[in-house]
Amino acid sequence: MAKGSPKTILPGRRPRGRPALPPEAGKRHPLGIRTTAELKKKIEAAAAESGRSIAQEIELRLERSFDQDTMLARVLGRLDEFEEGLLRTRSRGLKVFRDAARKRRKE
Image 1: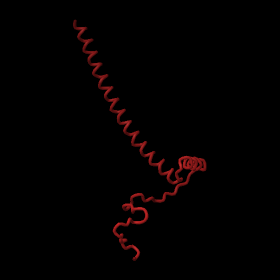
Image 2 (image 1 turned 135 degrees about the horizontal axis):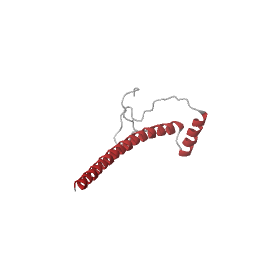
Image 3 (image 1 turned 60 degrees about the vertical axis):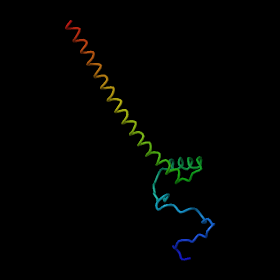
Image 4 (image 1 turned 180 degrees about the horizontal axis):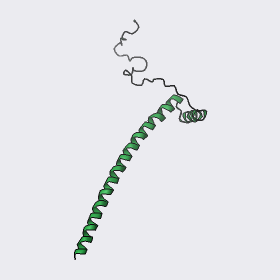
């Protein structure tokens, strides 16, 4: 069979090896970084403790940092909404209080 040609699978037989991934799925791209000896030791220790490779540990921690950024943005957005609601409620309460005070003065 020529290299690159599709394999023929006989009926009743399963293909050998791991199934092919779709293009780009699971493909890793190199990313060289420089770091301090202290951080490298922490990453190595975390990788050893979790049973992951150093590359897997770094990738996981980077992905989590982006997830945390997204979560923080959501929380801050909700805090802004909460603050606006409090200000509206306070404003309404002050208006009711002022109206009541004006009404008493007229009496």
